[in-house]
Image 1 (tube, rainbow, N blue to C red):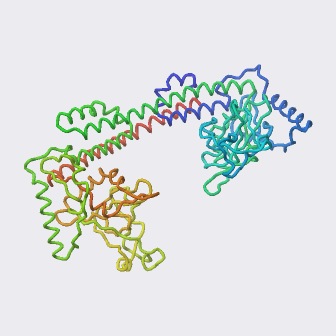
Image 2 (spheres, rainbow, N blue to C red; image 1 turned 180 degrees about the vertical axis):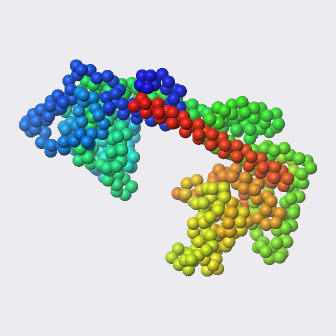
Image 3 (cartoon, rainbow, N blue to C red; image 1 turned 90 degrees about the vertical axis):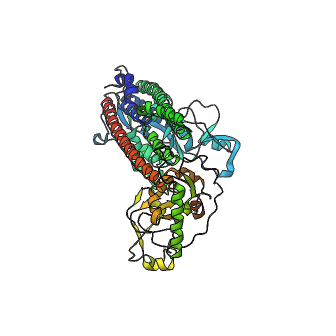
Length: 572
């Protein structure tokens, strides 16, 4: 399928911004293979164009206007990446360029709001020059003459991350003096003998990007390329007239793909917004009629709303929210009220303290008792977490002490493993000596582990031990005894629902932390035990349906991407 046949079917085949990016690469690939626009036998062949470029260089050298450059290596047929049309030639970039030079470096005290505009690596965006966030430098006239930019110069980024190094853009019409910083290379061509915008098309292809990714030198988190690599870069060269036709065609097609990408992103964002609003109506419903109306909205648009995997994530959160609001399963007036359950838990706690099996806990006050739950269903009560479970933490035995780790067989976990629903194994182990000499203790199977701090999304996560294990100080361990063991599954659901709220309580600078006091003071809406069992069963059922929905979406998206890739591959 040619691109001319493909474009009328854009909206059928191209469904995501990622598809647009792949389509753009197909367009660029076709452009540099001579398959995007027809060849014209009347065009001057690239071989003749190269002769004129060489002659012009020799003239400038003879007049002292250009330094004589080294002859670039000959391109052997075996090294040519692909076959070109008859009127094209493979050429090294150095044979086309008049000059290449690195930009200027100046320390921070030379930056001046009234100085000369300086293009940095950040000003090269998506193959274009962005004049957003321009920095200015205080420069001499000589420096401006040396590092000044002209319309038609190609600016190539020489230092960046490995995936971005080598990005390039052509300098457009200049409305003020412009220079460029040292992390960029200026490639200047010989007047009208090379179309810089076509060379930029070449730089944007996956072939050249891969070449730079593989050949870049890596130092301290940054990759770099140099003038020698640019000089040696193989470039497919069409006749000059065809270069201009290709650039015009690419710009025309990219205008369409940019518009499509904007439309797709907006549609995707709108769908997320509609889903969030619909789910909010569910959780905010105050009576059966409002809830039924809100559910009807979700039900009637279900296939549309949940064609996006991001909305399934929100659906999971809504299920948890409804669960702890008492809206997921019906209440039963025959259920023993939660207040009676709480009395039994407290009585059992007193008995365990009296028998010396657990320590008596000092109550932690909560300042939010009247704020969290405005209205609870019949039979529910609100309770502070430390009234229904024992909450402990752990520690990290000193790393330099081999006696704490060597030949250890006691599983020891950190907050980094709380991303999974269950913890089934440990990657580190400590010794009995560590237990005796540090604040570590072994928590039994089915203890809930809440991450109090950690990298990224870790803080606030909850997981359940399926092994006996000790923890580090970044974990809060929720240990259940006796009748309280039966409420553990519901408490886990509450913490999964409460993830965002718990994270918001964290304090600190670069890595905000929770603390054991805040975990203990957490207020939880507690249903009757029989209703908890119904809630847990319903949540499990609905989460399995969400799993199936996500798996189905992944399969469908995989098939659609394969089809799109096949079509785009055929176009290429």
